Length: 243
Length: 243
DNA sequence: TATAGTTGTCTATATCAATAGACATTTAAA
DNA sequence: TTTAAATGTCTATTGATATAGACAACTATA
Image (tube, rainbow over all chains, first blue to last red):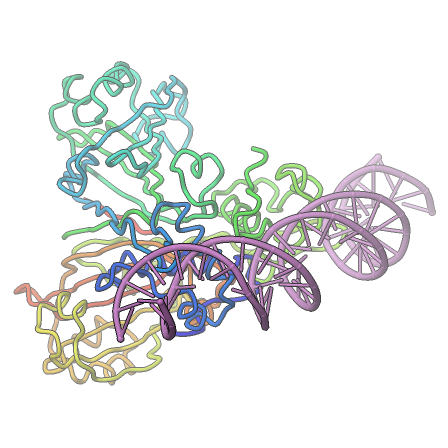
């Protein structure tokens, strides 16, 4: 596996190499030693100068993924990637299950507004009808995993922001508002580069990739109760669809 | 929407801006005029020099998304994004449906080899058992959409490469080999930066994002018949999961 | 036929990214 | 205690990235 990095692409070599090493760590490539290969070996592997590799490792150290120790080598500090099953019963908190000790959903802001075309299509209402919008960040063991913008029909779920702030969970908030069960109707998945706001909110390495889901949840009668656009740090998560 | 680009991140400004303009085009932001805003307007919007915007537009022109015309402006040539439904009956060719006129699957190479741990887990066989590996590229209307590496149990589907070369379709090839129906068991989705080989095969802008799916197909008795790792050009596709 | 608005081209300069080499410092093992 | 192997630091140089300004060339329209 040599010569996998590209020059003159607008993406710096040190960033490409950081991405590859992060991926290799996540895939368990260095599990035997618990360490990243020596800088000189990586430099040879990628066909670059040792200093370029050092820039990549410095970036990973900044992310808290590795720790370089003079004389010893570069130790792997963290290698997990959270898995999100996407099913009829998709729930953020429960989906994480035993992969993290603590799950929290934090409400950043909310407002009542009129549904635009996209939200109206998701919630099957008319454009201009009132909806509640919530901006949230979800964390696993204190580490940000995703930002989400969620819309709810204002009439039925006006109390959503308050309930979510208390329970830190969409499922529990729905329960408080009299909706004991709901199902995932559709999920769309795309990927883009993170913008400034999400980079800050998710504590990402700049230039990182986001996995975007656009999801519709309905009650058991098929009436949409939530439309949400979630932005996940691509290097911390993966999705699983079981059929 | 100003100041959304980040400096000193290892991702060049012109690349970040190209990504944002591509996204805006795809979202229909410029549908009224069918043109990208003037370079000076974009430069002001993103808070960069006009020359930097020009680099971004040159990259998009290279991709065939826009065409700059001196004196007039920058015309949008293409804005579609293919949608792939992921269901029990996920099939590449049928899934595209009416979104493209012509679908082709091209066999790049194939070989018989021993299953490694990942493939063995997917196909529910033992590591070291013989499998057929195929490298393919799939195109919609001549435009590359995804690269895939697929593995099949060698005993049951030894004729796969030959059948695929003729039919250009996994479904039809399975049918020729006596498997009239199959179902998608699991799909994993992640995202990474494209490497050199995929950039070339998919005719991507360098540094582009890939959506990765790792999928297991089984026959109707639940016996795995295919394990495939597919790499999609993230700016050309989206996935939809219907529950 | 002017004119405003747009893209195309050129020069110059500053900063970031990458390479190259030398040597110091620390760790672990012989 | 020596030595090999690893990371840390420094200087110097080259090429890519970004800014700045001026002006040419083209298009559509008043």
